[in-house]
Image 1: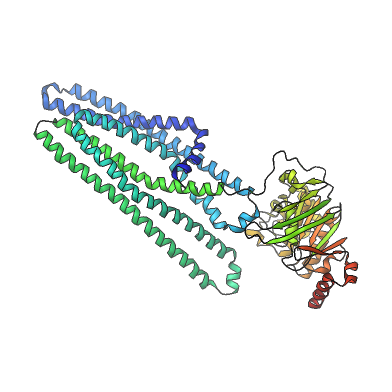
Image 2: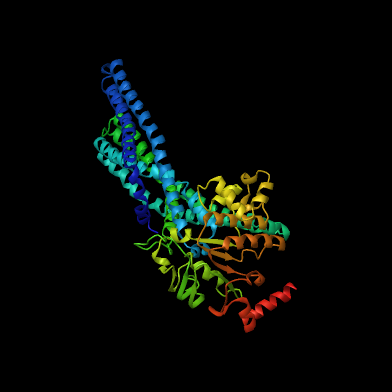
Length: 582
């Protein structure tokens, strides 16, 4: 991505802080003036002393010193503002960018997360933005100071000796071109380095989250070897980065030496021939030193610039990730939901691999009806359920709730009316109460307890060390599968949706836990339109209707007794399951 395009996306973040930025640049100009006046004071004192030492009185020297003292006080105040308030502005811009990235991530569909490593995402919104504070503060400041110093230096040096100034300034474009070559390679190396940090984060996350599997298979050495391989690759990338950085900095030093050599040689010859006064040569040397320091600072800042621009580029890549699922213009809230769901000629294929999962599905589910979905793996059961809350959008056809196309209602209102209980329960790091309250943020403790009682979770929660204030651990690791499932059911009770989706909610549980959770689910399903994806077919015998999905279509439909008498696919699935369990 071109630097100009990246900056175009970044500059609008200054808009909120225009006043601070302008004040920062004003303070930068004050510090620059203070620095540029010193050689002029020294030039005046030296030339006066060389011309007529008697005229250089203590009073004259004292006035010059007082002027410089005042300038240094101004410089100290201006620098403090730049170092403190300027950095705060940078930190605020970093915070705003991280907020925007996180908000955008919340809007991305499941397909994005299916194809992107969490470690890479975390790297982009954390470490990649760490350099933004320094970048956003110093970038305008450094370039502004450099511009002022170069213009003032050229003006003052030209007044002292135009020929010598032209000779000095001829080297500057050559120096910039030479350094740009290495600068571009430093940026490329930084981008590769940041990408690998994301891969390293993903590797660490994968290994730590799967640490029980690692230990169960005694594969600690395998994980260490994989990590070490990535770690060494990261070291190789850093070596490349440091090679270009060293070449970059060495080029700067070489040109420094050449320009100082020109001042010594040409300036000395000019002074011998009377073309420049001793005081002027001293001032000239100081200005050249200032000029070189400025150029060196800008070139060295290029490293920080490339770190910052790389971070912005990876931020922009997140912000440019397409939002597939969004509220269309004029979308209205879904209100007073009764729960009738209708699929009309619905087809779906995954956008990344175009694998067709559903093909022209026509289905009507009545208000309060309990429908079970069964069939072989990959038949589209979970996908069909995921289309209702718009975790994915249909490829073609429409889905409506109470006659309203779900694409014409707001996502928030749609998902507020749909409750999901999955096989793989996710509990957030926090307390039991906080996890239940996730179904209704801001819920009173009494509401949380009532929801837990309805889910059959209250008794075991009270037996925990701190009751509802017990810390559940990362992903609820301190609780059993049945306990986590009942907490997730309590969360849905608190949400109180009109439509309920149960995605193999008991398939991973032991018999006792399955019985307890099934009772809770039966209670939860009362009065709600319910779709149940069943792994154990014995749990859905009492469903009002059973749909058998296979080959992207609904191949059978009816209640348990009807389908058993039909002796089709459902009969085969049911009898096979009984033989396995028996």
